[in-house]
Image (cartoon, rainbow, N blue to C red):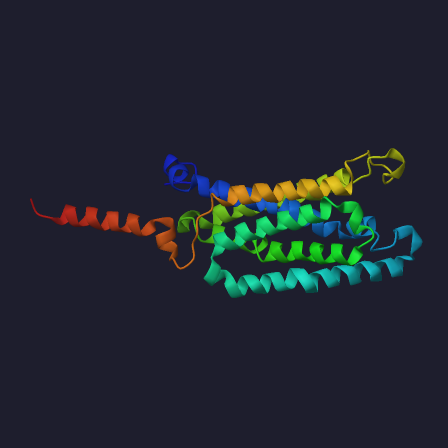
Length: 251
């Protein structure tokens, strides 16, 4: 059966919806948080405003902050996935990752004003958001599509899922840029309309992660199973063998 056949829709349609939607939703949250770290950290006062620093000092301060977050959150998250993916499973890690990303995103968004005077606490929870992104859907969303589809359609379905992720990255990048603008016209960046503010933008990202949890329910667990067993290709092969043997029986 082909990609646009009823048989594919029956067997793998919900799985494809699961892999595309979760990758799309993850990249909205992940790329917006990643690309605009400088703006988020400046908004809570952990980084000085750009106009108060020289270009060289700004590059140094931003690089230092992003390196600290990467070393404490992003990189360890990947290694935790490597260590536990064959023990916890893909489904569990992805669901857990979306859950904790939601928890920490809401935890920094709801008491947003509090973090302006408690920068260290904000930085810890912000790093934990990246930790559970990588010890979660930022790893599993590209692993699962490589396992759950038939061999003849595996690359195509993985490509469709990845394309959905890149669409999410575009939505997250442009969406957060506009949404995070101040609600007061005199405080927005030059050339931009008013937005909903950083606090509400972070709340939206928390809600996006909750949707990621919901769509993860469409993704099957693949731990400890062969590719043929996951995709049902063993059943097809057995069916062909039985048909062949019947045809060879003399009448």
